[in-house]
Length: 188
Length: 338
Image (cartoon, rainbow over all chains, first blue to last red; front, top):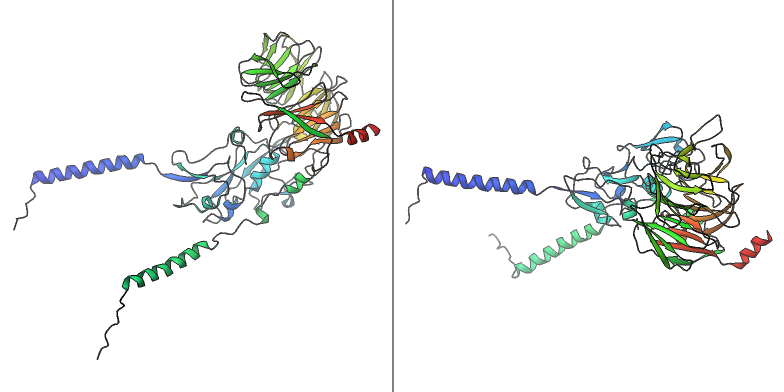
């Protein structure tokens, strides 16, 4: 019967060094493998409304953003007003948003700023579609990464009819709208 | 006495059966609809707004010219029926049959073109204007035109050149040396000028057949007629998304042109519609082509009318110039009778 070898100081140091090396290597590789987050491509979005109903969170982690450098600051804003509204004002009957999440603020005649209150926004994309069809297309949807719980399998992505969801790196978690977004990828 | 426990002779089969039952249950559960479909309150339905242009028209698309370069943006025609199409680093000239006859190299992508009465070709290059001589050699460059210049359209008569500056939301009056003589379009209550509203860089100017200058006020969805000195002569606005005789969207019409009879041809973005108006009163006359002929939504690059009254529309989605001509004689007869 063989005797169990006794661990001397040298063996202990060797083992410790091996563990340290392995740990450092794992840490280095682990840091390089960047975390991924779900995001939607506004150029592919068809404003189907499922971002509101298919997110595991209620209200959805998908919110509308307004890209101010594309916005026309229109008085007659189709993203804000019901089509055919008689009065261009903040009357509830004139507002398109089902949760009144868009604030209309006078800047200077005849321009208005439209700010989205994300705590009220449910990501339905009615304003996105209206602005795209009748305006400059400055409204668009994005998953707010500070709200999203980053499910392993995003339930909105599973049901998205335009396949516009993908995983993006942590360092670049949003897909901002540019003036050429819709020209480069015209909505289908 | 304790009874012996009965043991199955096929334990594996029992295991498989249990696994099938459990698997089937989870399969059925996963098939159930976990999330509701969005209801009508979450839908922006534009079908009714698109139906308004489902009418018979006297016009048909009779052909297309497809340039073989990228970023086609502007059109111009001459008295001989030649068509100029600008694109990336080039302006190509096509004859009436759609055959390319020559090319002019330019540095950049022209945003608009205008053939001046003296034969010069004025090329809007965004923040400056390039002047090409009648032989199409470079003659001059007009720079420092305004604080935030974006030239979106040019109209020229014998003495003056009018530049629609979408960046500064004004119209610049310039002489043929490129000297800015004045500008107009800023709101001025004392002169009853409402001010040009250009929410996007689509902002057109054109002369009618009587030599009167018409300026689109896209934010007000109508047209304004100006004198040289910037005085406003007349205006009409037609904002109504629910009516065919009006303009839809936040900023339309994005393009205007005049045919040989002096009728105003307008081009709208969003749901693309090409319409004909009587320019002085702003009364709608007829639809040339409705949104069903285009993708919804989309923009048009440019719109011109050639010497044969063909309406040429630059469709950036098809990357082609689409030609619309009046072909229906019954409507034409009705129109003549009226």
